[in-house]
Image 1 (cartoon, rainbow, N blue to C red):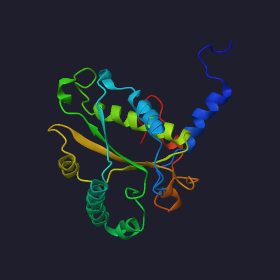
Image 2: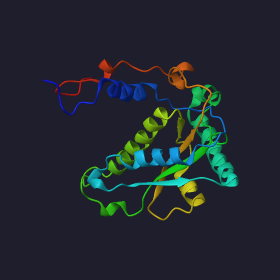
Image 3: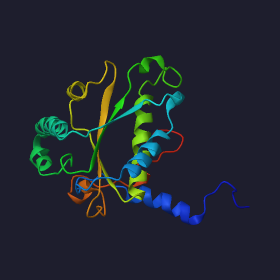
Image 4: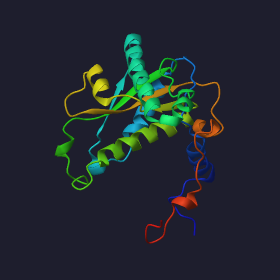
Length: 215
């Protein structure tokens, strides 16, 4: 018997296509993103699941060119610090393009709201579920963007305290992602870090256990 809740085959294929063709992008054109498309992406993000339905995500749209430059400078500081921390792989890391902040059509900062300690439902033993919830929102936006033909790059190279100060975020809130969003000339055929030889995707069998954790 066919499952009455099942999508049509073309709809199912579209979902899996978006998942498998999503890429963490670094190369963008500066063409603006249509306002109605950005609105749809944010609506997709806001429909993500969240622990205790707390909806911990907050989105800051960066529109001022000088603020974009300041944000880029913060990322550059952390890029250099990361290269130093990587030791022998530092030079290899410095050859990678790690962001498209100055080129993308739209720039969003995703933050976790203040006062999260008041939300106990589902977080009493795992308070980090607020971060997991906001990550689901980002993934929703990412997949919707891919379906819309837009590229997204998640940048995490920054000092959270410095970025929070730059954006006048209230005490207790914290930035978790800088999202570059925009048009691109082409999507990577495979993850960029795989193409660049940084690391390959492991087979799922290596991460799938049964009944207990296997060493």
